[in-house]
Length: 298
Image (cartoon, rainbow, N blue to C red; front, side):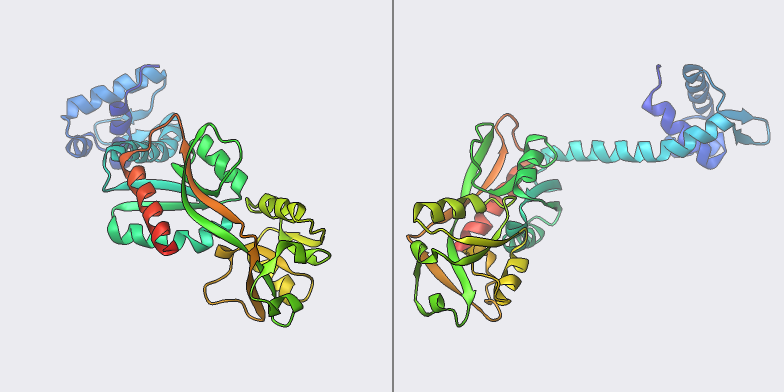
């Protein structure tokens, strides 16, 4: 079917104006050229789209069907072409970044604010997803890059470490372990715990550390969000081990935090596909995120 974009744009204008002369003025063509474009489109489709008389231009049923769908299709095409054209522009465009919930909550707001301040023509779109979905979004090309806890076996991804985040113990204020300045992992043996579930990139670190130090614990609850975990701890259901980053800077009501020894850290990383270069604008945002996080850590 030999249909051109020009023919479709001409038809859309005729459908809106119902006048060949006004369409010609809108699209920059003469009236005969507008008429020829419509005839060629009808011939290519094998359908009559317009009923034309000396007094009026009316849409046929086929013309109404095409006009109803064409507006959205052309708008999406224009948006896509604008996005592609913007790939060469590091000062403007759209960048999609995926991040796991804890990182989205405690790292990304500052990064988005930095981008808005330093690159106001860049639109920073954040997708808040569990870690595995972040990795799949990066691999599938749905996002430009992701922010994750160091993932295992990612030979297909380019990774850059931007933050080392230690694990801490969170307890009620009057718990016996809260009285010490720091707590050893083995001291957790026999404790009831409320932990992040396996959708979190941090859970494997916690399980490995408990096993390594011989701390056999009873996991009372496994939850997806740190806020819910903290509420469970405050209610007396158990203690929790959390990345330091998940603890709000202002502290937690009724709870206290203690360092765990030996010190264990998780590594927060930027990840992108090995086989696909970032656009100039995405590369700029990658560097901006890296610099903002490193500065906040210092």
